[in-house]
Length: 249
Image (cartoon, rainbow, N blue to C red; front, side, top):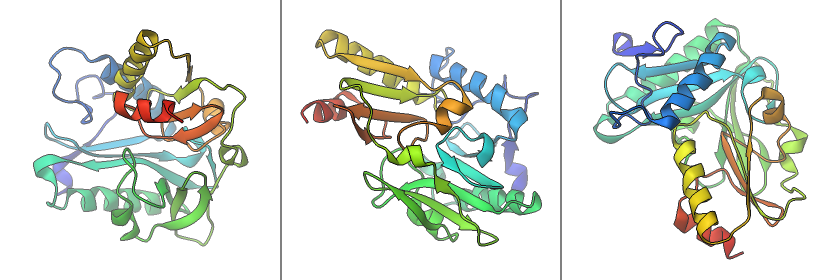
């Protein structure tokens, strides 16, 4: 099955599709932003492995030390995303991708693999039940209801950075922290920007554009985080319906 997959490299990044958004014929601003973000990450050991088909079947992970998340630990991989969709579900692709990540981690002498989870499965997070079949378990928690899942090879465990558990900011207006790691972020930002402009809702967008900013965030983060009235709400990307529910609080 290995021959069915391909890893993105600096040599093939420009002409390979990125799986997440593959229906667009014209250049998609979110995809191109992700491509640029990846071009800076690949030299750091970031891995994007995908099925060699026009399909949403991929895994994305990086050394924890250079992963843009407020998680700290020694010698771990951080798993951003594992996604198999549509007709490709149930064919063993997710298992093959996870096994590749484990083999890669062990070959490089890593202490384990970790990922963001939650007490109850949330949108925009990888399937926790599937991850737990591979030995992932909760090693740390942060409000509201998030968990750091890890599979340790040597008994050591990572943790959320202390600042990730703060969950509060001084700014009371709707505040969105985001990076360009996910192609869907661009359209979510534009959707929220347009809604807030049309409805006189004050909003602040804060781009997380360095590793240091990511590690120092006041909440858990995969590539997106929402605050309202100073309180952390979610890492889920927002549509208008979800935004309206938050604004009613």
